[in-house]
Image (cartoon, rainbow, N blue to C red):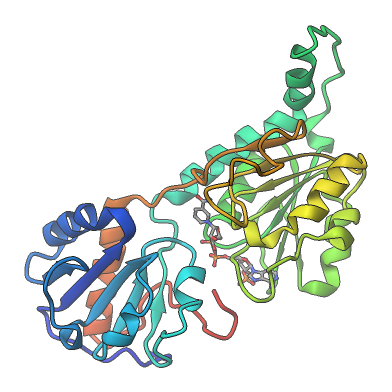
Amino acid sequence: MSAATAKTTSPHPKILIAAAGEDDIWQKAMVARLPDADIVTQHENYDPATIDYALLWKQPQGMLKTLSGLKAIFSLGAGVDHVLSTPSLPAEVPVLRLEDAGMADQMVQYHLYAALHFLRDFDIYTRQQAKADWTQHDVARISKYRVGVMGLGALGAAVATAMTQIGFAVSGWSRTMKAIDGITTYAGSETLTEFLGQSDILICMLPRTPETEGVLNSNTLSQLPKNAAIINAARGAMIVEADLLRLLDTGHLRGAFLDVAITEPLPESHPFWDHPKIRVTPHIAAATRIEESVDQIAENIDRITRGETPRGLVDRKTGY
Ligand code: NAP
């Protein structure tokens, strides 16, 4: 393999799980899938130098520094920002992420609901209900309603495809050029203005990296058509929250449907909670499905054992 790097290992690998409050669930599933492996959680006694693989979600600070024999690090999610931002991350150890692992279906459901919310004016009718207002509005034509998806990876491509299937006019934007049936695609920062200018609904499905942090700010959000809406179920850090609030309040933007925020849980006093143009959900758009995930992890351990390139290998340079 290229980052190549992962050293081959014995068929009885030693695996450490640090998965926030879910260590036991992951351990049980991994033991069932890899009965010959030696699988411990962060709360058991183990010799850090003997661990081959670490399965991580919000691991304790400093843990990685102690794991001197690691052959690979697995993120127990699609995002790897929580791993790559660890100061003690060993430079040479491959980092792997989950690809789809049951999340694409859930992302599709979340975004269909949110996009229809705006297409069918449910945001407006919710505000009207509070005033006992029975005003009816014309139904927009779906084929003329333009959805722009930022990020066409494992999850973004599934969301974009589902949007075309119910009739939206869909475009997508990524770092490198993609070809997806029925979708107009754009690539690179030089096409961002054009892409934004024709997105009545902007969906953010980007990973959090140094390049994407704050990508949705006053300047870029102003390039959306007047009355555009935003859906963000990727990471809170992609949006400059004060800029979003300003553009909602000045009326340039129609609304925002947000599953993520810079600070989570969203503090009780945060202006998103009771903003009339914002819908908030508590980071539930797509949960990792354990069965699919342990299959992916086990298959990757097999690949590494055979000296092959594993799936979901993260490029440390691009950050995803
Ligand atoms: P992925 O497969 O890594 O895809 C990332 C996409 O973003 C790719 O199309 C990539 O372009 C594009 N991209 C990255 N950097 C870019 C840049 N600087 N400019 C333009 N495009 C850029 O990621 P995924 O599996 O679809 O997941 C996306 C994110 O969803 C995750 O990172 C995670 O943060 C979030 N997520 C949230 C939840 C939730 O419950 N809220 C659940 C799961 C995941 P290329 O195609 O050219 O590489």
